[in-house]
Image (cartoon, rainbow, N blue to C red; front, top):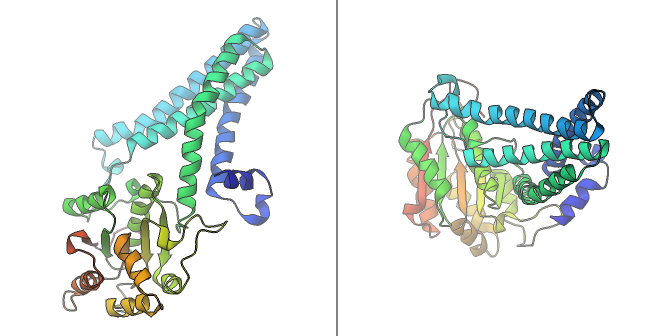
Amino acid sequence: MYRQLLADLIGKDSYRGVTLTYSWLANQFGHFSLGFIPTFLFFLFLKKRMTDTSAALLAASVISAIWLLFETFNFLGPLLLSKRGDVKKAYVFQPAWGNIAFDTVTDLLFFWFGAFTASLCCAPTNTALTIAIVLAIGMMYPAYYWYLTKMYLQTPAYPFQFRLSQWNTEKIPDNDVAIVQRFLDNEVQGMHLFLFGPKRSGKTSLSVAIATELSIRHHAAVYTSAMKLYCMFFEQDEHATADTLWTWRRASILVIDDINPGHPIKEELISPERFLSFVDTFSTNDINRTVLKQTNVIWVLGDDDDARKLSERWKNMLHSIGVEKEKMLSLNLELAETPVC
């Protein structure tokens, strides 16, 4: 974490790219500034009408109250709309309201810290100093948590940022929602979730969303396509490098995307038998088998075909390497009406 922070603070992002941790730091600096600058401007207005110390404290208090009202509306608005049953705001998977509330409180702490820092700069008072110190102490854990969380979200190399509450389709039955929730909440390693479906059925976005929720819970995840994973089977079991905190063999969540494309391509490009042959090509193939057996894996496949018994064949493949059938879950997604990844 210290190494990541050092990299974010020193060096130019224009040639090395912007990380999620860097974006978070910039975002919180923006929150600090949105507390600091309005307080300073409001102080300039108030100082003509009262003493500097009174103007500085009042400016910080008013700006802090405004941000409290704004963030309260921001947080409670979607929550109240969803409870009223607004169709446009309906969720297939409910947002993690506790996590969102914690994020809101974190933002408020930075807003308020900026406001009372400006108050100290305008007219130092013991009251403003005490509040600023309390806020600084209160910010320590949220800053640590969110910066670390961004590292957990950054390392898997997801193709896009997407939370589970954003995945929305009316064509998923309640029992499938329960299957996803079961995969999310299980505390035993070695659970496998098969996502079948044609193009635009939302299987890739659903897989990313599920893994993202687990990353936010600080589970080590890796996202990869099937083709990239085949190359990884041949890699030595090395420790993480400076750029990668963990390898696919040391992750607790593995997303294998693009195993088969699905409709309109009906051909099965990668069969479970062919996949297993890649697993076993590595000279010490027990390593690959053991990792697949002990890791929570999301398999993103094409259409399920009852005639070819695809679901059954993939489950039999995993069973042959020692995965209990009770640990295998399967969803068959339908074509979405609106564009979904």
